[in-house]
Image 1: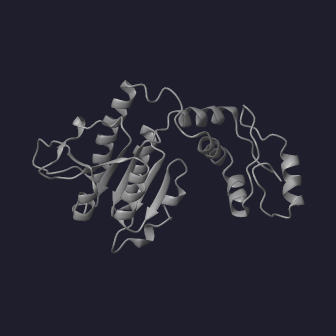
Image 2 (image 1 turned 135 degrees about the horizontal axis):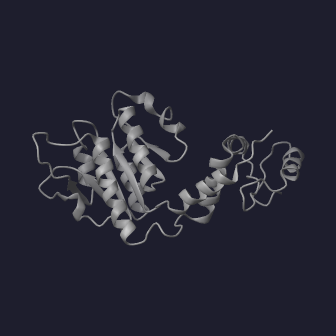
Image 3 (image 1 turned 45 degrees about the vertical axis):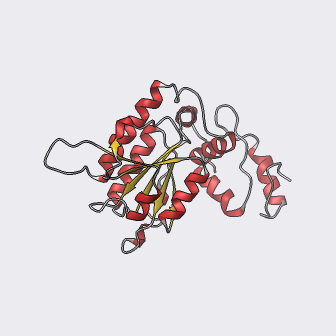
Length: 240
């Protein structure tokens, strides 16, 4: 028995997806502590970021791969073995990489234009980003400090910087209309509303059933009949 999505959850999911910012993302360079990564993901969701790009630590903490991070429902976590691969992928997508990094070229974080397609790079606890990662960044930024400590915890720094990015985007009305591509929007909506059915379909390479304008499955019996008739073979998006 498939539990239907309530109208309230359907409209909540739609409201969240309507504000997602596909041209704002976060990449990490060997950040390895689960509680910090979880806090960063929470902040990503809060400011409308749909994707986190995580570069694996070179040594230690390898168990993080797709364990606690993969279970997060509302932010997709993409895993890479090398920061060079992470940066190359994002630059191919048109992102400017802005790294939280102390250097002679670094500027205060609030002077960056976060309304452009932008990827915030964050480094490992204590050591910050690697020299290889620093060289890949288009801009270095700092959070000015007024006390004895030299830096914030990485998850706190992420929140400070991303709230500034959100502020800039709110001023320009970038949350006022949907920006996600339609196919990603609809697929994500279904995955959030019907996670078990989505997993069933993904495992068998089946197309998702259609939803009506209140989030209910349209003629699920017909969809299931087509699935049975195909003997669980792949079905294309037209249901053939």
